[in-house]
Amino acid sequence: MDRDFRGSFSGHERDRVFLNTQGTGPMVDSAFALGLDDHTDGRSILPLDVDGDGDLDLVRLGLQGLELYENQVPCGNFARIRLDAPVAEAHLAEVELQFGATTSRGRWRFTDGFATQVSGDLHFGLGREKRIDQISVYWPSGNTDTWRNLEGNRLIILSEGAKSARYGELPRWPESSRPRTDTDLDLSLKLNDLNGIATTLPATGRPMLVNVWAPWCAGCETELPALAKLAQQFDGSASFVGVSVERNDLESVRASIAKHNLKYPQLIADDAWLESFFSDSEGIPLPTTFVFDARGQLARVLQREVRADELRLLLDQLRDEPLSPYDLGRLATIEQRRGDTERAMQMLTAALALDPGSAELHYRLGSMHSAEGRIGLAEASFARSSEADPSFAPALRKLGLSRLRSGRAGKALAPLQALLKLRSNDLETLLLVAEAAEGADQIQLARDSYAQAISIGSDVRTWTAYGMFLARVKEFPAAKAAIDHALSIDSTFKPALAAKSVIAEQL
Image (cartoon, rainbow, N blue to C red; front, side):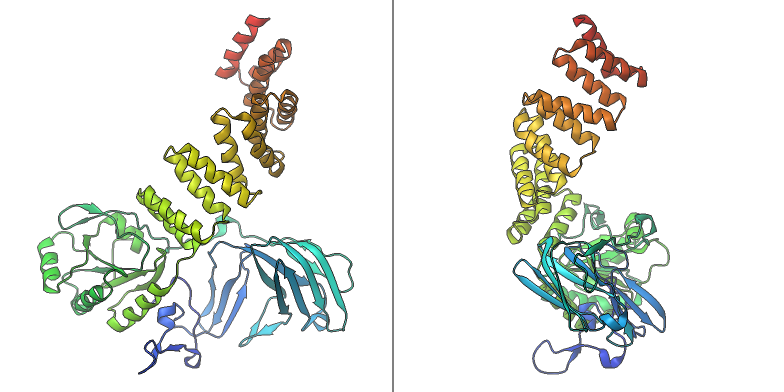
């Protein structure tokens, strides 16, 4: 059975989607190309935030049982609206949201589609907006209620006639409860070619087909000629690679390559690669073909002989899909894992050209510059990240640290104080603010920051830092008391022992 790891939604024959790619001639079942096919029965399908992460997953119920398809794309800004009213009073109520320059509407109902009961909550995507200017509810009673200036990324509970909205929490799955998936295949693993040279699968950025075969596989003998022709047809627009599970008789592998005129790269499987792609190295079905999209995500895995027409349709579909900033960012991560930092930076730069306001993309580019020792470029990227989203804590921290460690305490203070507003009781942030304030000659701010740190983190490191600060401002008796307290917590802490000796010389 074909298995689409991205999800499957088709059921009855009458629901199947057909596509004529040429404009004339027979229609082609396009569910395969779109990744929406399945050989099981499908009855009801429901968009539902099952895991409570703010985006909509899909639940399907068929005669074979219940299936869940988790949405793993990073969640954007959203609003979840719940009408606190009996069904009879809320059925067909219309909800209107205004945010930025956008107006979005939804109607409350308890059934939809084919035999599907839907959630009582309405889900709205907010794009870049994090707040909602106005929500209006047009109740079946004829009344209209309006609420203004509401927070996004929350569950908002509305009651007819209520003057204010209420907020609720979305229940979340704990990470430990998530089922293990086998879809994140390791594309960075190296395999030897027939000459014993270690190499990885071809570079990402375009669709890739990985065919697992062996010279003694009867189905492979039928399939390989078709793959050879397809590889020529898609030369430059898709990557093909063969992986032979025959590891001992390499002459037979060479003979099959020559017989079928296979001009695309051929590699030899090892145990680590088979473990990653098949979970174990025993009982591997042959032939097997993995098809990845341009993002490096698994689109199809076919554990049977493949036909040229179905692969051609699939590759055409994948080739024409544009890469989003998210896709390019994911590809950058893959390239970074491969060790190709320059290509990773190129992909992040391309992603930023599409989405120049992305705080996360600027931050990731800054982190790569920092790892390569390009401190000035890293700091500029962290600054752009914090400008794009002043509440993006990782960028504020990296920006403050970069300036602090380069001797610009005064410049470091602003981002670190902004970080402290987001993390008011974070001990590390308090100590960084204290260090920056002292370097900027704001002694009272440093004193207050150390005092707050002491109040929430009475550990040896914090007391030592406080004592050393008091010594630097020449308050030696108080410094000695702080260091003595530190040593009462840990009498072997070397920084505290060193500070005690210095302070003793001043008393």
